[in-house]
Image (cartoon, rainbow, N blue to C red; front, side):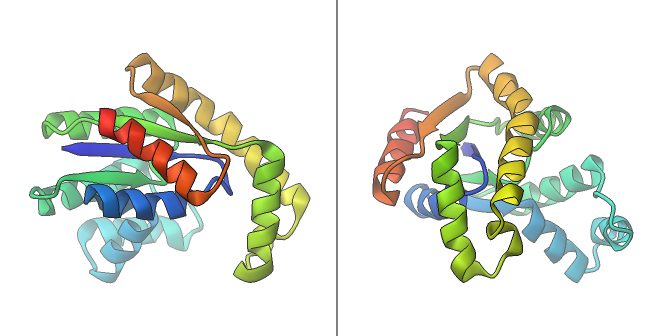
Length: 190
């Protein structure tokens, strides 16, 4: 089973490349945001628990999110693999995900980290902001802060996966096709 964690700063093209990887390698997309919304809509016990926190504007505890991921894995045992989007974001979450996946005999195959120069990220996000309507894509100071927060929060995760020989830096500069080709080459080796 192929299980990928896709990382990259805001504007790195994670969404575009995730779609490519899902199609090419026949993976199941596991977005924690989508998962939370579907569990809440289905009124599952975990969804109701998550809603309590979200209604107060609080983060949903890791154990609730991991429980939802566990349910998704259980319901999709026949798939070729998963691509994790938006999770893990901390070392504690990565450890919990490893425990869950390893316990099911389906460890993380690799963490793919798109590396893009700061000015390119800013330019991409400002361009996206012209059509997305997202206010956080229209203000350069907010964009710079998002990029800074990403680097502060994810650098421990890179080290975590590097210590397991599962961290792969991918050059995220160039055309969508060039980046997709680099990702394919790396995934084909896993």
